[in-house]
Image 1: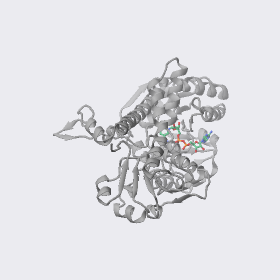
Image 2: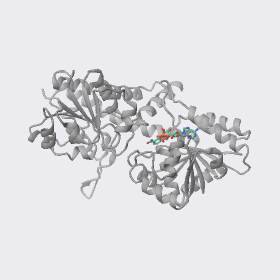
Image 3: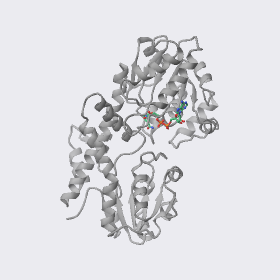
Image 4: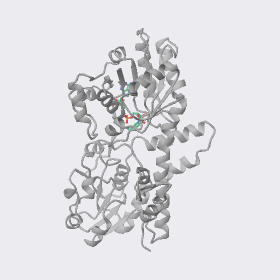
Length: 453
Ligand code: NAD
């Protein structure tokens, strides 16, 4: 099938490259020329494991190109997938990128005779596709939905594992306006992917995506609320509490007497809270949508507020451990919102750095791939230093705070922490460092969800 994808960021580019790997002919569109030039030069503008190799393969096979020319892309494809950003504007979802992209596609469709389907892949609140998108398309094309196909096909990939998630999805959700749109979008996946295809209406497809993200975010905030209670009460180790909970066979079934350890139990883990380009904005957008629809989204509100308190709680802990922060040399281990990505959007680590800057600390930011992105968004300060190397970062530090559990940090021997730092003090905001090794080495190890009485 010939597919155009509008928006070539994390979702658009990964989807485009993976669909070309499956044999489709894909044209990725982006408004930014530097992104397009980079892609065509086989340099992915984002860090995503496995993406560069696939990108080279699909460009070499001539099944994939990128362009800024939307008209060319729409004219030379049967389906346009919309994968532009849908940020939160402080009150509700910001649909301006969606409106512009669909209006631009509609203007091209005015000149196109052949049937064409517009398929929204961006995360949008229920009713967006059948009102905002449909209206923009109909106005710009002077055609009616039905003459133009309309679909909503949410994306569930996770950054850091985006390529393998896209190639091996758990489910493919297709919401459509009519049968003809469904048959076209189904053709993208059927025979290429083994996951079940779930056919629903447009609004249900939109809601499935939000509900899935909000559920995972809620588990994280639930774990962090339990962590706060453990710390307040004293002498309760939240990681042990959650491990005990996660052995329940309804969460962690056994086969042949061995636990399956499904990934969901990773979300029952206290830490620095969730970040990234999806969970924070999606929970907020769903709460706002619920409120607009006449509901009081109490659990979603709590999920957000618990998460937003998390950085303050980390600051309070490290301030108490050091007996004050002013002038201290604090190493922040990790800037990306999670390992295996360079994405720093809504990163709790970046928020921590901003708070530490207010305390007049010397902040050493360490991340193997995200320092450039972080540097471009963090306030410039001669007291904020960036390095990709943990050993350099730890030099003469008063405390190291683990914010992103990159393997390289977890695998750094305890003796390196001890030898490099001025005083070997660690605050593990992810609960991931090997506590026993650390304490045996004489390190003052502290973590989220535990305080001695
Ligand atoms: P992104 O910011 O990485 O990429 C969006 C791209 O669209 C940018 O490169 C931008 O230049 C381009 N763009 C914007 N308007 C355009 C236009 N009119 N024409 C051409 N290009 C245009 O965003 P993303 O992380 O890929 O997210 C896209 C959507 O997918 C969002 O709705 C997001 O919630 C959803 N989503 C994201 C993820 C994720 O892990 N990032 C996962 C699932 C769903």
